[in-house]
Image (tube, rainbow, N blue to C red; front, side, top):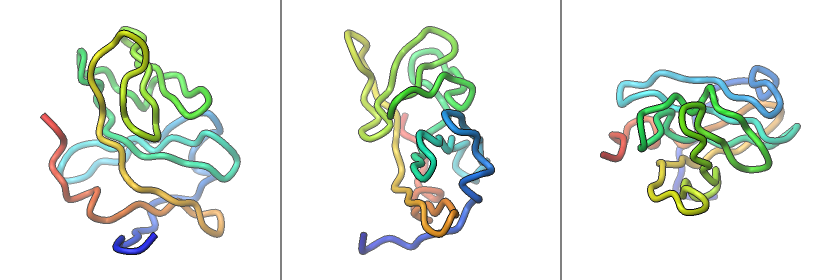
Length: 113
C-alpha cells in the first residue's frame, strides 16, 4: 500500500486472538482487533448507536459486535450489518514481522460525527 505512513503500534501477540486492545490518541480512542494469527483491523472504539466501547465487544470472523445492543460491524468497511443503520470509521492496518502497523494519518483524523 503506497501513500501511507506506517506507525508501529503493537506486537500482534499483545492483542488477544479474537479480541481487542484500545489505544488512546489525541483524536479519540481506536480499537485494534485481532481476527487471526496474523490479521488485525483498526476502527473507532465507539459505537454510533449508544457509544458502546467496541474494544469490549465480541470479535467473530472479520466483525465485531457492540457489547451494549448487539450491533454488528464489518471490520473491513465499518458498515453495520443487517437492518441496523450506521457505520464506524476503519483505519488502514497491516501486520508485518509480528508487529501491527497503522496508518499514522488515522491517528490524526478527527472521529466521524
